Image (cartoon, rainbow, N blue to C red; front, top):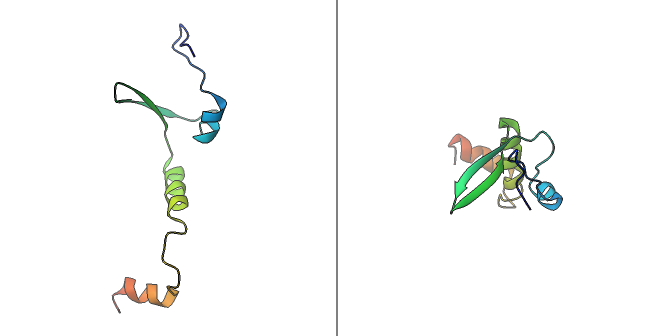
Length: 76
């Protein structure tokens, strides 16, 4: 892979798909370990969606809604 005279580079398709680097995605460039890391810049909505996606399914099973409400209200 080569950088053009305009400073452009083509990101391989498998990496674009894997990391959600779709057309019109804003990205940031960060210095890391003697190189550069490219990261998508997520909107607040996309950031929240990503956090929710990663959190989905991590709660303990068997906890009822009533139990959660008691815990969050301090009734427990």
